Length: 110
Length: 110
DNA sequence: ATCTATACATAGACAGGCGATGTATAATAA
DNA sequence: TTATTATACATCGCCTGTCTATGTATAGAT
Image 1 (cartoon, chains in turn orange, blue, red, brown):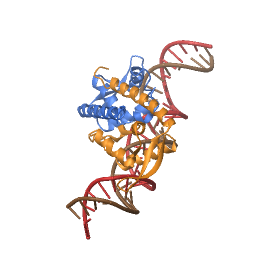
Image 2: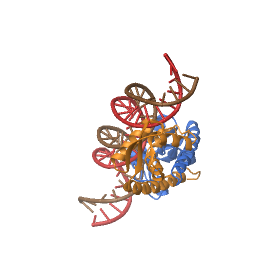
Image 3: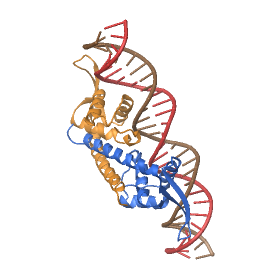
Image 4: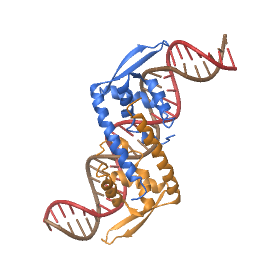
């Protein structure tokens, strides 16, 4: 698992936006899915996700709507806004450039 | 260029350690080399590098030694310690796992 | 009756990057 | 001559996102 929380900075937002680009999701679901899809390399908790969701909503990149689920529990479902979709494209490109740069700098020969 | 400084967190240290794993270098040289090798995707400044070097030295991952260069300017040359070399291996593996996870999470299908 | 899972929320601690600023010298340009 | 740029070190303080801990509430399982 990735113990270094510094690395996590800056990637939570694009990851969430990318999830919501595919389908409407609620917070708890996102946490579980992130952890599952990384085989627990990432171990997100509420303290990581919820503030991030609120930031994204304040920035109008996502929107929320309460719904009562089949299990009778209230869930806040999030969807991507048009602005969010545009930012997602930028963030993905930014990540690609960033990751490529780090890979170059961490390669054997300098 | 990578505008998001949050992404930079956590990668400065392994990058520096990796540089010093290949040869003895001084701070100003590292800044120039990082910017050059990323085609200015990274634009490190003194405020990024020097505190980081001091942290690494305090943690005994690197060591320093003053020298007078050919241009008559004093330079502080850094070298990797054995401990630093061991941490570098860990950090590189950590980056690999991290980058792979992000790539999975940013892929089209969720 | 207790524990676990679901599902939301937030406060405060912590730490690293970055802009700004500072010192000092050498070389170059106006 | 003077001004600027490049080299080379250093640090202060702001900002911001992550994480631990804590809280509320409900449903289902033990």
